[in-house]
Image 1 (cartoon, rainbow, N blue to C red):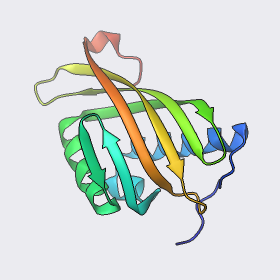
Image 2: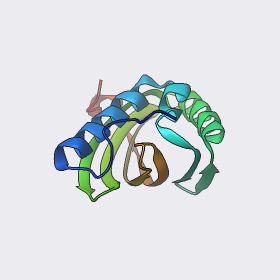
Image 3: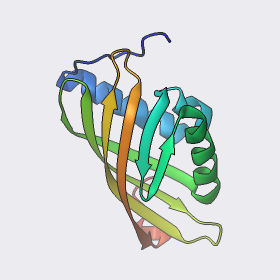
Length: 137
């Protein structure tokens, strides 16, 4: 696999770049594009789900964005070390019945030497909101 800059060890600037790249990819709602940022053997915990491998990530994201309509995300750098980044995030979406939700959470990321995410651990809480309360459009 080709390197996926920025590479560890991260500085504040390169960690922020990695976070922005992730935000843009996830907002594309394109599972194949998002999955390219992860190692073939990536390990995830997303809420109560454990996901292993890039192919499983693609399937997970397809189902996620079928359920979470008009998904819009904002990520913020929380902390970083040599090959790890922690982010806080919020995203908004509505379900098939039209109920809007704001989801809040934290993610811990670990990268390999080539800049691919090997581990992603996400803790997420959902809050129902009125459409008029949306922050992201």
